[in-house]
Amino acid sequence: MVADNLTSRKGRLYGIGVGPGDPELLTLKAARLIREAAVIVVPKKTAHDRSYAYSIVRDLVDLDRQDLLELVFPMKKDLDALAPYWREAVEAIALRLEAGKDCVFLTEGDPLFYGTFIYLLRVMKQRYPEIEIDVVPGVSSMNASAARATMPLASADERLAVLPATYELSDLMQVIQEFDVVVLLKVSNVMDSVIDLLEELDIIDKAVYVKKCSAADEEIVRDVRTLRGKRLDYLSLLIVRK
Ligand SMILES: C[S@@+](CC[C@H](N)C(=O)[O-])C[C@H]1O[C@@H](n2cnc3c(N)ncnc32)[C@H](O)[C@@H]1O
Image (cartoon, rainbow, N blue to C red; front, side, top):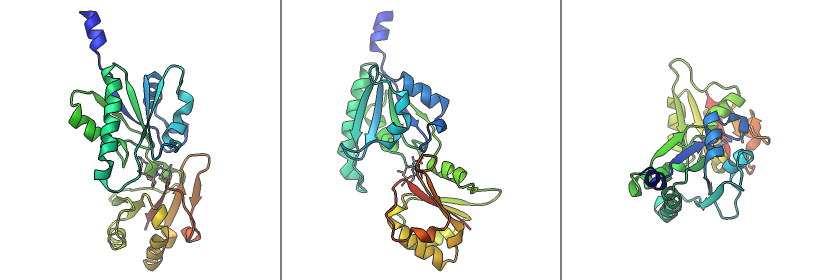
């Protein structure tokens, strides 16, 4: 009976936030679960890409003892086009969970803050509702960037808005007018238009740009005008505090 229970034990899936770059910003729980897991699941944008999340925790992983499952999720806005990738990923993970292996899915920052894990969670719950899933929060890029730039995100009755770069500039103008602090994620491709807008609103001096916060090649730019026309890293954001 005991043996039956042991052999039928399914693995547990963990969505793990590994923080923004500095391995010291990993939680103790995340570090323990990564060390203990049988399978390390690593999302990548292309087959040849190197995973930023994996690079943060590489020293905790022992590939002689643990399996690495690399899954490709291309950067597409069209969620329908991504559906087959999610289904394939869920099947690959489920196979290992059914074999009793615990799997940790690595997400840079926090898993439930614009993280890849959100889509996986949805499909996994639909297809395998019996699978046990735990989410371990991580330090988000927004919190870490505010810390590195020593720029408070919100205090007392201030209102904070967070927007990904999918916003229209007219929406952005409205949000900036309505909120005290605005965090713009995925800003790298739209920086020039954002600079134009901040200049028009005369708040360009209230913005700070943070690239790869807490990592060795972090950059903090307080005169964001100097970023005009530059090719910027995807892992960068802007905090505007009026
Ligand atoms: C898909 S979202 C992922 C957010 C992530 N889950 C988090 O908790 O921070 C990607 C965007 O987050 C921001 N980002 C992620 N990591 C960052 C870092 N280390 N430094 C600055 N911005 C970062 C950038 O704006 C990037 O375009």
